[in-house]
Length: 253
Ligand code: MG
Image 1 (cartoon, rainbow, N blue to C red):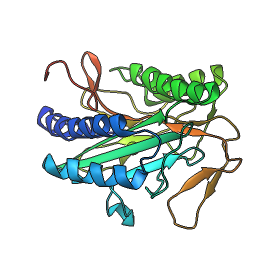
Image 2: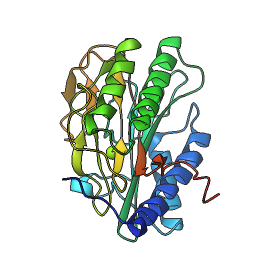
Image 3: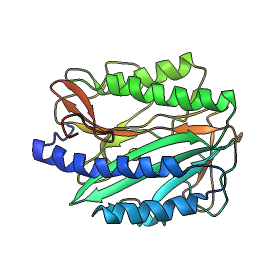
Image 4: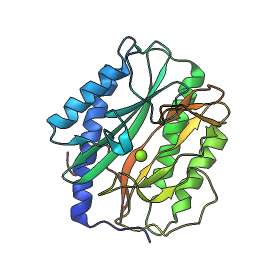
């Protein structure tokens, strides 16, 4: 059984997710050679608090920062640090918010200055996987339809799926059931229904998807140091299909 949220709860998650989007916009505009991810973290925290929310990741199982910043071969959960971003890097920024008891969660990967064609292919492919996964989040479908759409596109594009991570439910907790694999056959798992609220988040790399965990307990790298990318939206399933909550919503605009 996957918990179905009431309209009022979806509105609360939406409000939290709109802050995620606003902060992402702010950070995206600042990402350029020379800025550090620690600098971005400080800006994210003050922006989130200025909008009346709390950075959801800070203190989550002891995570010490407001954003996750995973650069180049860093996959997810990277610590922001003082290293200036350099031309040609790719940076994944994951933002989480808690507003009035409800969470929002979203991530994007962006090139710093001019990046290689391969790196752009990875970023574009990861975003396309996210969009194709979201397109499967419709009433009457099955959970693994999302997984399968992500895997099919990654395979087509020659991108490897990092299988240790996946999407999740979200609401009054940052991570709720179900876990959403980024791979697998279609037509399996719980039936998708209006009121389901999920984070869908393909995590891909250019090389071998084997993962190395650093001693800080959080940072994960591709063992072969190939570039990794991650894109994530919080979405709600409605009668009319998926509604992305971490993007501007036409009805609210
Ligand atoms: Mg997430």
